Image (cartoon, rainbow, N blue to C red; front, side, top):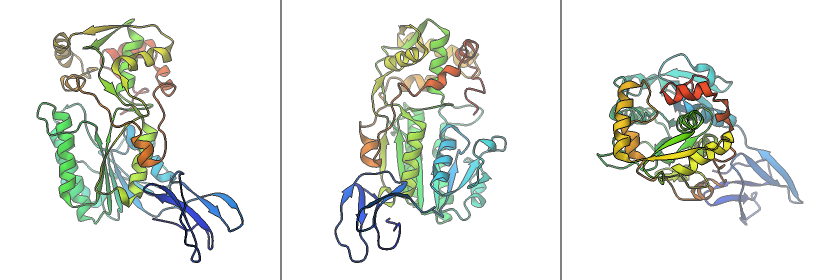
Amino acid sequence: MFRRACTGDAVVSLGLQGLYIEHDEEGGNTLRIRQDALSFLVYDGSGWIGWRPKEPSTSRVLVTGATGFVGRHVVQALAERGHTVRAVGRSKGREGVVAGVRVELAYADVTEAASWKAAMEGVDAVVHLVAIIKERRGMTFDAVNHVGTGNVAAAAKEAGVRSFVQLSAVGASDSPDLPYLRSKWQGEQALAQSGVPFTVLRSSLVFGPGDEFINTLAGVVKAFPIVPVAGDGATKFQPIHVMDISRCIADAVEREDMQGKTLEVGGPEILTYNQIVDTIALTYFLQRWKLHVPLGIMRVLVWMMERMLPNPPVTMHQLDMLALDNVARLGAVDEAFGFKPRPLHGNIDYIKRITYGDACRIALGFMPQHIRDH
């Protein structure tokens, strides 16, 4: 776990409860402090020299869903730490978003177990990000989120992978009334039963450039002076920025002390749906009114949208989940990973790229490629 910065120096390196000064052979005392996982604080016996970067890692980390919203940020975070990243996509076409010096490209499909044998060759760790939140074109929650996770985990076990990090969702449970969350829970179970050393990170709502939730809601806020809200809008979320969840994932890959654990993570604040709408309107410097629509009426409207629009802003499954709070424990990221994630307010300027024309298309179920390209 510890790395020596130079012979005879005391080195600060990452531990479960923070960081430690590791003395040389003649030393013996240990001092705990806090610092990130990317550098060492070096003491040469007469004074503090300063921070030195970690030695580049030689680990090869396979990332599924590498060209997706979260995936491209995870690939970048891992490559910046010195890992060689094998970026896996389902098909060719978007390789440019992850191309880099330390990035290898591979192709495999979570629904085809045999496609993973070649992709796993020589891999030390796996980050599994592939999941769907909307069923379409024969891609079901069970096939992708449950069985697909099992296929990747089994291939990782066969290849001798030493660490497997899965991004799951807050609220994952064995509830047949919530098929998406149930499929995520079943995926976690398939991973645990595979025998590969694993860590599960259950995340709350992830936001950032190219996200779906905030960009979709921003389109509605920009397009209409009155924003329809399902129910009372009091459902709670704990939004976490995509760069922060990517940092958590990269840390989990490197930390053996997290193996066998399931951690719930979220941002630094808990916001209601109403407050998220207000934050988006404030970012646009717009005044918007909210129309709270009873869930019974909203179900009828969503049922109609699912049949009329190619990509409706909300599905029946998502509407059901809007009745559930989507929160972790405040301070969980700070405690487990040693940093404070950024808040929603002040970090969604990317929605300003949405023009009025874009907003109308988003409200009608057509997400512009320059807003979300995947």
